[in-house]
Image 1 (tube, rainbow, N blue to C red):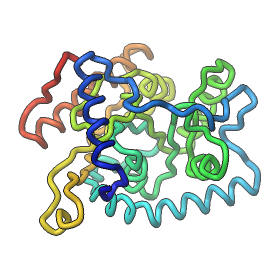
Image 2: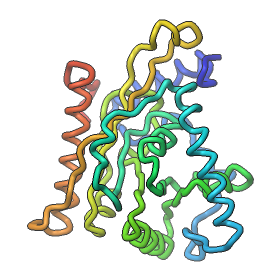
Image 3: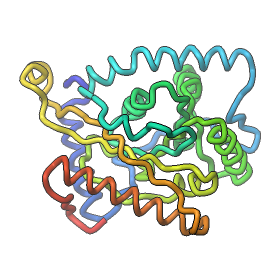
Image 4: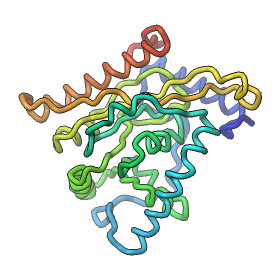
Length: 273
């Protein structure tokens, strides 16, 4: 078992599954089955932003622990570090996007935006029962839903938080592809949120490189670098729909440029994304 807790045999299955999906052009499908058994459905009565004293105290405690221990955990597990914090200067309310390549990538983003209040949009199946669910909600997750009224409530909550200067993270690639290095096609949901609320999109892209000699003693896994790229601001001369497309295409362009600059070549796929 390696440092990330994934057996080599499991890792090989993941790599094979990713290759299979890439060959078939299914870039947003999950590489492992989703467990819906512990999911709490997000209905129109779901409270996305509880104001109770208990929840506020719980959330403050979870956020403090995540901010204090997160950098140590991500450094140990992923060897993660952050570049490009200068691109966050002057940015308050914003939509953050990141390639989804590790279960801990949201913790690296939290480290990158330290000092700002972070919320994370997640798939409905991440809204779980039990202690883990409470921890995730305390950390600031906001689940999507198949319920139209619930989604309207989520949109209202997001507008409120962005107006308060908070930052909201989302994964436009949709599914987690473990340690996948190339950028994948985007879904446009996070860009609709940015355009509707007239806030910038801050693209973040995680790359991987070979471990140092010291680190390779206990792990041969590549280490991660999170690049904070330049923000994409809405264009006042464009309509809401045009801004969605504009910001999505510009963010995709920044991802590809980051990949090419870091690895020294353009991303090559087994089939066209």
